[in-house]
Image 1: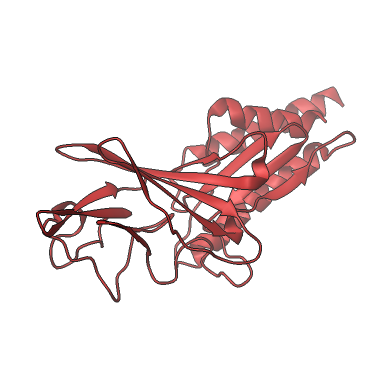
Image 2: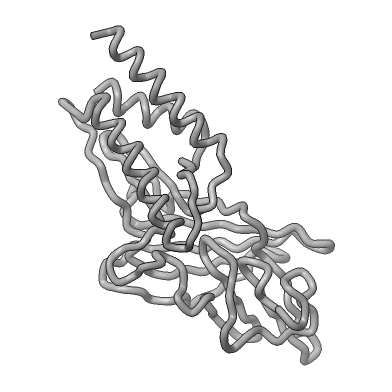
Length: 249
């Protein structure tokens, strides 16, 4: 029995290390262990009534407050088939002809009567974290950033769990020189919860969870005509903690 568990631990850890060594093309995957419960968020995976998960079917989310307008897309780049941003400066996000098409988040501020745009989310680096570790049901925060010539900018979007539908962003707050926060409500912000209390899943259940997480991410990528491998985000310590809890119970 002991030898069997050791073998299973080695195989499971090898699987996790292999998954984390591959560049993921399906961002916004996040798992959080809270005592005897494993919370799994797959924001970009298809769910009922939302085949693209958290991604806006318009190609972008938009919120305007006072003289500031924000466009962003979660877990992917923006696409504008209508109502594209019109900016005096958009060179870090597609230029005048493709403004907004080469970044994840773009903000426009009124300066001297002109809309001056700045990319505040760019590239594939997207960080996901829990909003409230004492109440994981609340949802997650999706963070993106961009290092520009003048400022290091960022956007933090709180994705609140709401099983009743979508409520787009309505508020926008600026923190510091170039850091912005907003929020939206979406069913994708609700976690899939796995109970791992006593008499738990054991090694076979652990293998099924790993395979299901990988398969879920694969579905999300195949929906976008891409093949990918799931990357379990978070620190190595978190991954070992989750794995150990599932196997040893």
